[in-house]
Amino acid sequence: MLNFPKTSISPERRRMNSIAVLTSGGDAPGMNAAIRAIVRYGISQGCQVHGIMKGFSGLLDEEIINLSVSSVANIIQRGGTILKTDRCENFQKKTFRKKAAAVLRNNEIGGLIVIGGDGSFTGAHLMEKETGFPVIGVPGTIDNDIAGTDDTIGFDTAVNTAIGAIDRIRDTASSHDRIFLVEVMGRSSGFIGLQVAMGGGAETVILPEKKESIENICRTIERGIARGKTSSIIVVAEGPRPGLSARIAADLEKKGHASRVCILGHTQRGGSPTAHDRVLASVLGATAVYHLLSGRSNAMVGVQRDRVVLVPLAEIIGKRKVVSSELLKLAQVLSI
Ligand code: F6P
Image (cartoon, rainbow, N blue to C red; front, side, top):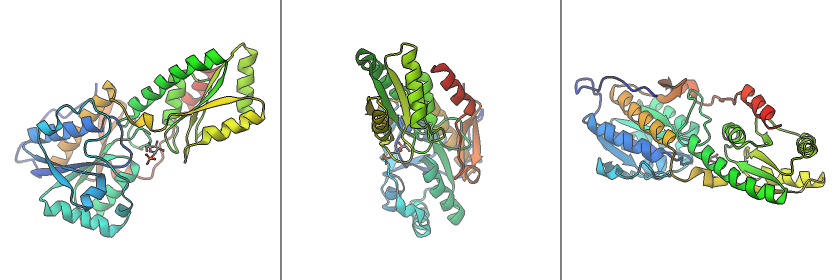
């Protein structure tokens, strides 16, 4: 079970009376559960909570709404984000970050919670460094690629969605004796790919961290055929841009192995969050409020070895979290 601070924040210890929350970058199932926790825990501590629409772009456009206990009712089970999200290029520029802090101050908001990934945290970190405006990050991305935390909101749901799809694909793959390449998200990191390959019992997995030659993939397929396997599932992590699985399929065809390709794409970003993601989002969201109101800033709430921790943003930004090479080896051993 995750931990949560024993004490609540007394009015004397509370450093601000009004905070705001925004979601930024790719949406992730569980973001709504985090928003709900931030609003309800914040209000329970005597604080007013605002929602900023469309991430940092909405902040620059001053799209700020007041959130009440009832405005976050009935959202814990919903995927996506009620606050909408955006990838804001302008926030990479100092002038826009200064403007954002000014917008927050003009609206008498004392601190900001950013739910997002590494790119969003970079903007938040720079804004606090340049303007002194307090920020706390909550890790929300299906990729689970943020350093300083073992888990991110949305990862578990995305993995389960992909495994559900693989179970279905297996039915048709085995009926037709076919090879299937199933492409999963994760950009340049293989956390989704590895977890999905292990949980879906894939015959092989291709990750940004573990590139395979076509010859090697063919050897795996042929070894399976020699053992009497008539179908195979190959999990392909998309890498920098989607479509890698189609390129591999074309190369396999040249080597005499026809296959079918299924790119799961954005289906992994949608859907109702799993219980795991709902609880994770609820605890991290409330903990973020706790630290912000207590005067902490420029840090992310995360999970390390099942404990909720606060990690300085400066320690995690731009750092690469790596998939476990032992688990990767185990996935290979089990797929034989
Ligand atoms: O970062 C989350 C993520 O879903 C990645 O896995 C994927 O590569 C990317 O976002 C897709 O982004 P967009 O929805 O902007 O195309």
